[in-house]
Image 1 (cartoon, rainbow, N blue to C red):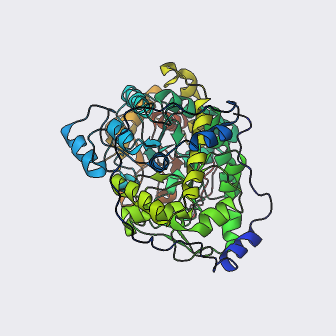
Image 2: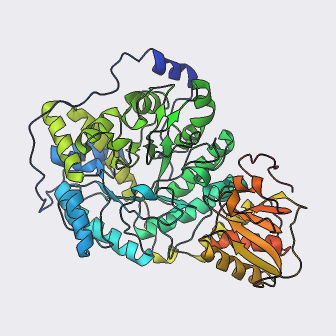
Image 3: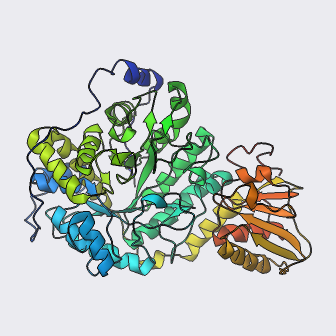
Length: 579
């Protein structure tokens, strides 16, 4: 949608970063431990929606938000900045186990009660699969299929309509990155992974694909996608991997900007993550605090470039990472660093949208008690606190900080105003119907991206097989093997159980021990690094295991398509492509 881009600084960033790292060191930007204050009671349920104040013209979301914020109590403001997860696949009817989980998290039984009691501004839908590198902090799943998600989000919005902020939608978010981090898989179009899109190297196709994804999320009632990943990959291992568009900052920047335009053109807010860049470290921020050793030159030229491009494209959210950027604020996680989030992201990159923390139930954030962590993160510059491990403690901690003066009310007003501005923007976006889900047009966009990604890294260009084919796969990939066999048959190849040319599939987390020495063809369905250890005469990368990606590989092996992709990362000993 036009006219919603966030302005940013056009000046070179390096002098500013130097100033941040040196001249501002004594400015007291990193907040200390909040002072102790008398405990405050847990919030009372909201039973009715007061009449909202008169709103300015609908074309001015920021003015509308400011007018509404002026009518809100401290309790309402605190609720706006919290975005927890909840147990249960329905807003109002949950199992006994889900009710117990919600009571432990928030002292209520259902997601709807959670929204009412804490006057929440939003909620995240969670879930995980076997190959999901983010599974460690996903305590439950409330995503089963498209119809269930539509019912759940409708129930959540109904609960939010009873709040004083009920004139604007709740933020309902999820991590729909595609590839290994894909929360909603059943009944929707699946794009290939970010790395596959990077291999395709066509921002026009990227924007088209992400616009299709955004339309389907909107049809499901999801209005915030915690994507795209703006990290520039600089290591073969770690939690980012194929979630990144690649290792070249200019190419990644172009892809990030295209994904932002696509999502937000469909009325779904895009989120750049993980600021200031998670791609150069193999340490998993779910379990430890990664240290970024890059100097300021590297940060400016590489890691910050895609974030700048995404901000230029109008991204409405930026997610802070649990990352120790030594060149900016050594020893302090970006989640809790005023220098990183306020001085750099806002002061120098001029981002004016909503900042959201990475999950507060990850180990680096759980260094502090839930209430203390919430206050520290808000004071650093986060507007939304994602997935606090104890919602009641986070809520009460913020209220105590307001009462004691440890956090200024103006900081909360600022955050809530940004959040509500975003909500007014989203409220004006069109809402597609269920007919948008997994439509033929959207499947075609995903298929185009998937086909353009297929990369050949060894063997004569074209990789055509003649005669029967036997498909094998590394452990636990039977579903991919079966899907690929079906794709090969559809492409005209004969598949046999043994005796044919062996095509071996490897995927997320696989290493040298998962390869087959006798394979004629090895196909990497995640990052291509493992191909550097393969002995097959033909090496292909799909970077993804969706049916569309496997169909595209099958068409290459049947001689019906050329592998036109180019590896977006360097694999030692192999070219980016042989074609």
